[in-house]
Length: 471
Image (cartoon, rainbow, N blue to C red):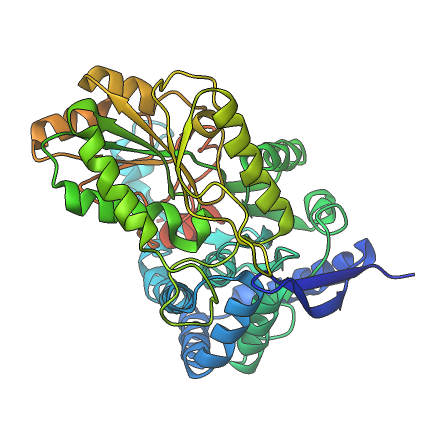
């Protein structure tokens, strides 16, 4: 009896699709097809691959409203944010076509500068970059369109082929984008989508000897397992893991602007973003004033139907995640935190949880929301007294993805940014800032393996080959 993947609308709890779950044999067949397609696809001139990517981007644009409806229905992301994500996915696809000519251009090192081996003045050496083969990818449920674009477009631009597994929560967007890539003219086997459990699908991708590389977006615990398995089998791996991004607000900051930025950065997509602002530290002198601004901004959020253009925040992806938020709030309250806003499951259909602000007087308390990644709309707010304390608190988790510092003093901003252990620090800007063409990742448990980005992905999933010509 075949297994099934049931896709729910998180805003209503209703079933929107039931799909056959891929078996390991199905995954093997997809890998085989990708492996066979690689030989011809990698031999295609770069201009052919680039033109197909640009055509696919145009086709996604032409099908924008249809894909958007699918994305909103299965993810629960408010339609304004979903539209922004889909436009972002289109630009990632186009950027992959444009950037490929620069990333893959190679170079000619001057070997005549070296004494050994002898006679280098009579040699011409050319370095070129060649694709690694079949790349397996895992997509996230919070950004199903843009992670599809990141896992597919730069990888195939470089001449590889891909087999990607979407989240079982949001497979329909990936399947629709796959159909569009096929319609755009990509040959069979270049892009493959397999829907199923991680055990059935991703384990096969990790273990199959025909898969040369792995690209994964997901939580750190699973990412570490993926990295270990991939490394143990000699595969390249690129992991985009978890974060618990802090924001620090100093008393001299533009408090109105900072509050607006932080509320958006925390509650966008119901807090389900790796680089959402997940912890907030406010200088004590303005703590109460800033808290009032946060309360006003949070209370004004419209939570509801994600298809409504005026909705600011929609549901979480599942009932399991609602229960997880209840657990974070309960833990914090039991350890002295005070719920200032929200804190409960909403009394309506679907998987809604109120946007929640927690007052935490002791930033060193063993409160889970201050130590773990909270992938939902719960924000602990902590006072601090000194610059050094702010940095210490910001660094008090195992994560180090991104961070934000709000202050009018740029010398102080740069000192604090230097002290924070993170992949990126935004000054008077949102932790949600990401440049898709550039490497994205962090340090500590938010960074291992190569960082993802259009350029870096193409570079990582190609290998240098030196052609040595005797003259």
